[in-house]
Length: 84
Ligand SMILES: [Zn+2]
Image (cartoon, protein in one colour):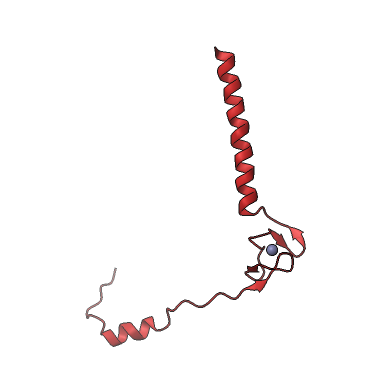
C-alpha cells in the first residue's frame, strides 16, 4: 500500500471536504396517505406503491411478530402440560 510522502495542507483538506456535504432528500407526498416518502419507493407509513399494497408497515410487522410469539407460547404451554 502506498503511503503519502507529505502531510496535506489544511487548505487541501478543506477543499476536498467542501464536496462532502450531505444533500437534503427529495420527498414526494404519498397519494394514499399523504405522508412524505422517497420517490419511486413504497410509502413506509402505508406500504403502498402505484396504488397497490407492496409491503407491511412497521406496525403491521410488529403485530404479526406478536401473534407468532403468542402462538409459540401457547404451543410451549401445551408441550409442558403433556410432559407432566
Ligand atoms: Zn402512504
